[in-house]
Image (cartoon, rainbow, N blue to C red; front, side, top):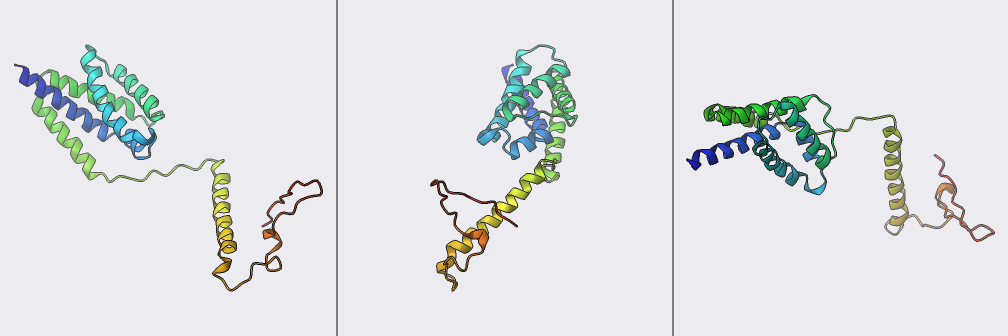
Length: 192
């Protein structure tokens, strides 16, 4: 009699993995390392945590599951899910648990197959951060850093170029800072 229960638990675990595997908010968090270096391991742990939550609690409501999932995603992936998918994922998990509890294993297998098909047919999109007003400043400094690197390469590569690297060939902007009267080195602002 224990074998059907083990098979049911394993099937429910597969169902959790399938639901979480098709949850875009979680997958984005994992793919972009929101949980740190161990994001993938945390997502695998999350499957076991959800399974344990269902086995430890009797008669769970989807709102309780929703709160539990939100807490895990917030704590482990430093992410707040605001796309409206959290209630849907919680409801799917509750339905799968209910079907497993009632012995509707064929329906669960069909649902898992649909979710796996959905996961494999949907291409993984690349997440691009939306630009906020403060991002323009950061973008500009990245471009400035790239330009500065290029200028550093020009100066450092003088041995491989035919141009001498003495101070008469450098533009005023590239001149080395000179020590002031008090011994402090004065660094001027780059002009563009």
